[in-house]
Amino acid sequence: MSAAMTCRSCEAEGLLPFLSLGATPLTDAYVPLDRADEPEARYPLDVAFCPSCSLVQLLYAVPPEAIFRDYSYYSSFSETLLVHSREHARELMTSRGLDSGSLVIELASNDGYLLRNFVEEGIPVLGIDPALGPADAAEAIGVPTLREFFGVELASRLRSEGKRADVVIANNVLAHVPDLNGFVEGIATILADDGIAEIEVPYVRELIEGLEFDTIYHEHLCYFSVTALDALFDRHGLSLNHVRRFPIHGGSLRLTVGRRSEERDTVRTHLADEAAAGMDDFDYYRGFGDRVVEVQASLRAMLERLRGQGKRIAAYGAAAKGTILLNSSGIGSDLIAFVADKSPHKQGKLMPGVRIPIVPPERLLEEMPDYVLLLAWNFRDEIMREQRAYLEAGGRFIVPLPTPVEVGREALESVEAG
Ligand code: JHZ
Image (cartoon, rainbow, N blue to C red; front, side, top):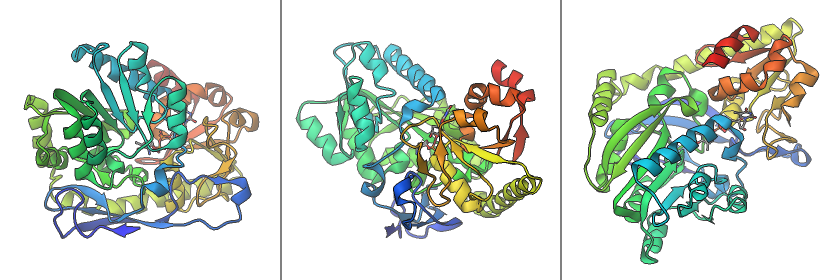
């Protein structure tokens, strides 16, 4: 574990801490039952703001080898993400006129959830991902995958082999990278002269304003604004040309960058909106820690009250963010009986830290707990649709953030419509 004394992007000193979530286990370190008696490592989770370039970042970093080689997150278990990714791929095929002579490179290609769409259309791809299990799954569906960490060295090697990408995609990976500048320099190196990179990151504005504190974990070293990203790309000769927002993962930015400046109004508009909101000023972040403590206390009080009334409570979604919500809020196995999750890579294990068993979603209907705490709140509608039978039988969900609320079968109609 290393402590950041200087900003990960602009290298300035004087980072200003504004939130500590205490010492928590690694989010994806699901505990196998035969290791249930062994202690787990915990690492501090402290967040700071860089007054020089506005980047929000963790103060302490766990080495990526400890997180990403043995990685249990497989992207393909969320239909909403699959649909979002298919639409992204199709749009790129059309807007960039991709064909059998093109090359699409994806950084953190996971189990091939996105690149498979290009493969189906005969467009050459290369996935890059150090996570061994997901990379095997990608190869099994015909997505060639290099099992390596991406950075400027790998990019130079690929370029010297004659590879240049028409499109680079890097979704939900920039926040994971300790050497931000090396990663972005790598993108600049591997892009063809007229190529573009599209990069998705969870938006720090949604995190702060939607109180999405559980998306802060050791995997995510940075929390991006357009302001901070513009400076980062600029440093590597890349032009930020277009910015869009999508609801995925609690609210994300999609940034289009290229070597050529083709800046659209969206860039200026976002920069101006962020300045107007004060996102380049520490005051914007200062009160966040107190708001987190309040929501944690009100969620815990709600669950304790329900347990006190003899209600049985389960949870849904063994998401990374679930590990943080439960551990940092002091919600353990005394309150939650089990966590349902579709992924066989997580079922049969225990949630890190709080050690709550992870089971298949069918258990909800079999056991009919009175309430289900929705840990994967970002997929609320998809999960409610999937659990229609549980809701129709009288079960209720608790959506924890930004304010804990109950929803039941009365919400199904609007979920189906939306
Ligand atoms: P999910 C992920 O974080 C992964 P996580 C990663 N850490 C990242 O950077 C962020 O996103 C942005 C399950 N599920 O994706 C699947 C069902 O069981 O929200 C997952 O285990 N049934 C790289 O891990 C979990 O819920 C369903 O119907 O916090 C969701 O995890 C659906 C939709 C999901 O995020």
